[in-house]
Length: 277
Image (cartoon, rainbow, N blue to C red):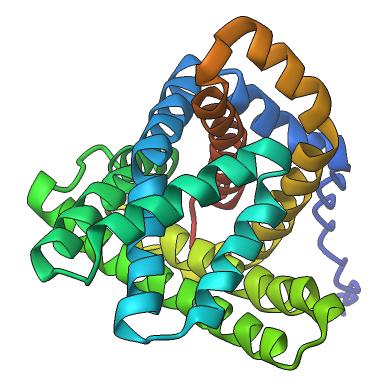
């Protein structure tokens, strides 16, 4: 009678080693040092310089001449003060006010042209995100403009919601609540705008669950970048004034837009690293 041998357990596959923080960050650091990434970030920064002021004109004009809510205009000026310290914020607010006053009532044609100019930032951003996700074919220019207009209307709507919520705080006549309302409303809406950009702008289907955590992290990182700007501005201002003279304000916008673009692109690289949905 043959003896029955007990079945032996199959050897377990060794578990993959746990990666530390630097193991996760090292591919992103290598990505940052790629030449194409710097080209994308500089192109995005230049587009921000061209798009930033027209977008502000649209926002202020809508709040003043369409919704007739001066408190929301005050919130926009408050946001500019929060983002741009000292003379830089004063310069932008003064020229924004003068431009809006000289334009007068909102004209549909002018508004459309301003929005068309403001959505230029999404062209290089789409190319960069496509490259990050391994997409070899970009959208046509017309399709890109359609997607970009949809995103800029959405982002503009989110900005108006943020300004409206903060304006409610101002109307409460509690000065110390102004910045609190602005930050409480602005940071989540900025995260939502980043999520929509990560999710919709690449020319392929992107799983929402892959980009949502990154949008949260990048939104908080951009908020931290703003405080770095506030701290570093006194030293940076003197350096830029010595090197660029009256053009230091434009250079400042480009530099900080470049830094913000590098953070946004790093978030896209991180979320796309695992190619399987």
